[in-house]
Image 1 (cartoon, one colour):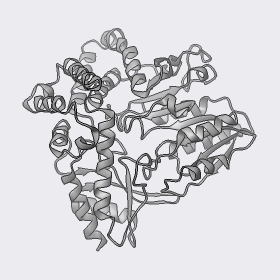
Image 2 (cartoon, rainbow, N blue to C red):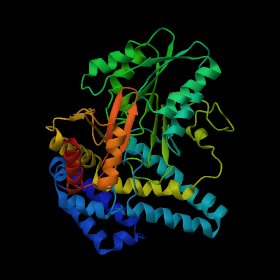
Image 3 (spheres, one colour):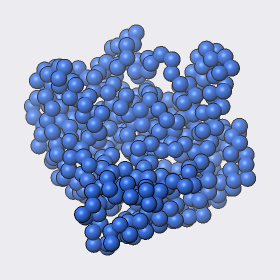
Image 4 (cartoon, one colour):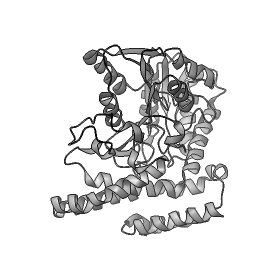
Length: 428
């Protein structure tokens, strides 16, 4: 009952906060709010299979009826209420920019910081708002006090921007990079942890861990790796681009020191919004990427000295949080996992189809990778779009090869039936 009351309070807050939303005021919007109210007592597993409910969620987006977007792992669309909020704040800013931006909208930054912290399970004094996970993680990578000879452990399956940032530090400062080469997919936690531990030495200062490998959706056991690292005095940097608002977890429970995420992925916030987490006792010694008045301050805000930025984007993040909480983190994760299993189970017995993603939680959620023997991933992805208008992405990176399929909460099983039939046709 407490969970139900909390859920209904969040729904009431959403209705009030987005009172100016034309969508929520429409007949479809009212149907969605009624469905949310009616679902308040239902468990995540049963709701995950309710296509009528998720059809109403789909109506809350403005996605193309012609192109089936299954590349939400790249960037996700915003629900209508977030688009409307962004447009509202943009129009307001243009009435008198320096007044509304700095004296009105900027006052919403601290409440937004608190909401992001609550969503991430940490203190507001540990969260900075920025533009994407690359900016957040490069703030960390270039701000850490490393010297020539210090070692950093990272994986060949990490995101290219982060790999290149570490390579630049190696080139500029003489740090040494030690590489993990993961064999994926796997549900063997001991293997994954040991792969990192094997690269640790007495000179290792930092380990960089990707929470969910973007190429294939493999979730790594961050906390277990972090504990092994901390036992050896090694700091832990986590790339959470694909996990924040994807499935429930707490930043404090991860036991990492630093974390970066893009909010325009699974939170469905405006394009160009992100989050930086720095553990409170680490803030002082981390230099900001852009100059701040006091670079050694222990205030998380020193990482936000960007100058003029998009206030409408920033404030619309709060509406994306509203929408996310309206669905519920656990329900969202259950639906995303259900969608992945739905299409995978439908094609698993095809003789030429192979998967590059673990099937069970907690090792994967929405992202899934498949390959068809005898076909290059680029050929498969091109045919999916040219012949079926299904937008995916071909993956050819290190030892990961296939086509990445990434549905989102607005994806229906009937949409995935289209993908299933396409895979069957190509696999024959």
